[in-house]
Image (cartoon, rainbow, N blue to C red):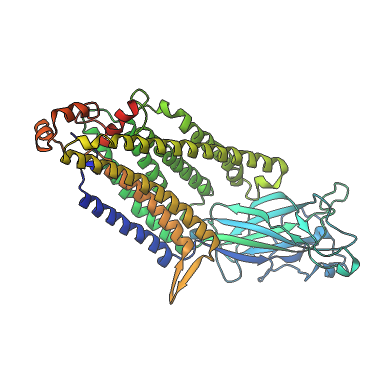
Length: 541
């Protein structure tokens, strides 16, 4: 009889394979923790208040906060009153990056959040549901003395959520409101060395634009980008893992096609999981170093979504193929109740991502959370996806319980077998349970390391060694799922070990009664895995 490699592999060899995979897993964590820097860097920018005294503000003029061609500046808003400078003439200018620095394509993306410093005034308080409307222009250049090229120009509305903790009395005038940070801008590539933001707050009392928003003193930005050193380590990992998974995938499918039967559903799903892992591994990000591909963030989200949807589907089918009766097995249609929530949830998250990052391809200042309708729509997609995820895990937990119950029921017939045969099947059951526990451990490690990376400061110091926890999380978990898929395709590939009829009934000491009992579960030499067949009879009964 033939089965999967995991069923014909001795415990010693299985431990050796597990040890090798564990070593690679530890290396994946160490690469991120000891070699790579932190995944991202946050940089604070304080805007400079420039004066644009031109009568026609519609013609583009880029105002630099510093440098040889710096603008006419004012220190604070009070200085504008004696100089008769109107609010429409003030431009908040921000140069990215800071002086004597350059941006790099290795930074991969730029994400900015905005903080408004608003002072309390009795005659100019923030109204309820106040909205600030900003006229924002974004430009770039690759030479410090070249002309600026416009990249985007949009009207950017943001709702203010501010509180004033002190009594609203004349004595407390000048104190600042406590305002929530606002999403401002996201760009999916950093193809240029220098960027310039010019932010205007046009006032129009007739149209109620920027009226009742308080007295804005300053605009501060926080820019977040990926560290170049982490990007290089990440690219190197993807470049190494891509051929590894691709080679084992080709080897796995070749062994299946050598069989005299067509592939069963479980083998097809494992192969599809390998394809999705290869898809997420392909280091197309290398091209982002030389090309201005702003869609890379969206593309990365889609790749991750495909992999996780395939992984969740595999867990359901893996359990189901060891539990369901013969008529429903080996057909994807038999799993529509369990796979359906995965499809619906994935579709909802895809639509949400397209509404956010898809629109940002043409308008980097767009955020679905800035309007009431957009917020309700986004929450609806997320809630539906959450409900689908909960339904999925209920189905999965039920199926895992059923599988272990079937195996436990089958174990009651093991004492009637010969010692050699009993030990053989006990080994199969142990290996199946072991794989289930490994799957649970991988999922648990993902959740645990995610929580740890959120609650820690980002790095640990042990003596003179600094461990980057967040980087270790990314590289370790990424390497873990690659090793998981690698192990699946290796251990569940068809084995070439066969036992002849004489050996099965003679050397293994199977009596005629046992042979009759086992003929319903061991169909033919090229059938599915033995644990797969072992549980079928119990499910049918």
